[in-house]
Structures are given as structure tokens and as C-alpha cells.
Length: 314
Image 1 (tube, one colour):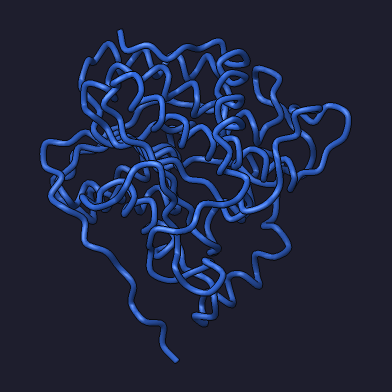
Image 2: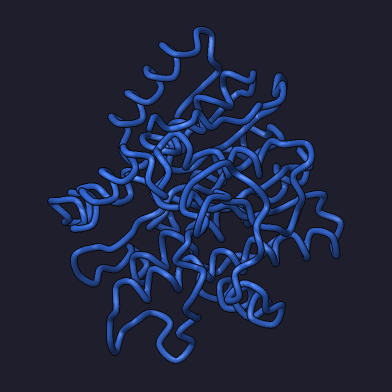
């Protein structure tokens, strides 16, 4: 049976400036292309300039006249995050949309960032945390909507407060879940603090469900020469329209969360099919590990300490 087409309408974004991390390929590239097609100017902060240039070419071929440009960013380096923040603040342009989409998953062994953090925690959460802090004046000026991409892996698990950096023992999937739980708690706390302090930002969460995205494929840059073992099965089920989403549908929850005029702050968007693995995007029940306000506040405090950043609008 052919798969039913799933899509959403993107409103007119002319005059808006959008920043999408992880947009050099996969879902992020698809998000950037849709935003550009809706009239937004899109900045792609990328780690690999060659892949970034290819992404820009792909977008311009699909969307003639697209306003897209590259900036340099390695989320696993707080120095790189600070440099991007300085660059964009020097440019001085308000940011209206920020989609925190980039991430890493399941390195073949325990790896650490340039600053000594476990790779998944440092890249998926701490790098984005520091980036939002650095961009806060521009986000506030643009009354931005910030959408942070979590994962079905945040549905269960916890923050390993006794060994946050997984120095004593290492479980790659528990560490991945922790990174996405921390990131989700941050996104929700960002919305609460914005309302308390009058930053003018709205913040929500999205997740892509399960689809054969580049996150699961070979990632030579972190030493994974082959796709994860489940990738072939995920790709086969996706192609047959069984339970799972596609790369095209997986980007839709983040786009809905970031652009739909009716999308709410402080909530989670994801696929609405069985198990929330695929299907049309919709608002969803918040995952249990993301519901604690106290845990979110603790994640915020610890993240400020670890990244040595503070959220100020000047």
C-alpha cells in the first residue's frame, strides 16, 4: 500500500531571520530549505564547510533566489560556540527563529568534546545551551521562537547526577538519553525564564520520531564507519510505510513547532502515529523525565557552571 503523503503548510516568513543548526544534511537541510522557500533568510552554522557549501547549492537549486548563508560552528567546542555568538552579535540582526537541531548519537566508544565533556552531553545539550546564551540579545530583539529537537530516547531515563560526565562507567544509550533529557529540560526552562524575566522568547520542543536519518548512518567524523545495526531495518520499515517516518516527515514536527502560528510554547511536538514513531506532526503529552520543574532548574544551574555562560540580554 503506498504511503499517504504527509505535509504541513509553512506561513509566509518574508523578513524573518532563521538559524538552523545541523542543516548541512538530512532533516536540518530539509528544514532550512522549507524555511527559505517560505521567504525566510536562513543561516546555516556548520562544522564542515564543504558539506555546508553543498547544502547551500542544494537549497538554491530547489529555491531560486533563496537567502541562505553559512557560518562556522562546532557544537563540541565552547570556543567555537562563543565565536559564532560574537560573529552574529557583531552583525547585530535580530533572530526570529532558532531551531536547535544538530546532534550526535551512539559514538562507537566513549569520546569527549574539546572541553572534556562526554560527546553526546557536550554536543547535544551543552553546546546548544551556550549558543542560546550567546545569542540571547538577538533572540530577545527578534522575539524569537526557539525550538529544540529532542528524541524518543527522552521518553525514559534520567540525569545521571552522580556521574554526569560518565567518567566512572559508560552506557552509550543511557548517555544519549541523558543528553536529550537535559536538552529538553533546558528548552522548557528557557520558556519559563523568558516569561519571568521578560525576554520575549517563546521556547518549545520537537522530536522527529524514528526515521532513517543521517543521525543513524555512518559518521566517520566520530569514528563510526558504518551505520548502526538497526539502520537497515529502520530504512526497510520506513520505505514500506510501516510505523516509522521518513526523512521528509521527520522534519515536520520541528517545522510545526517553529513556524505554526498556533504552536504553543512550553510543549512538545512530534509524530502522531502509533507509538509516536511516525505520522503527521501534532502536540504531544510531555515525556515523564521532562516534567520536573526542579530538575529543569538544576539542569540550568549546572549547565551555566559547566559552560561558564550567563543569560543576559545586553
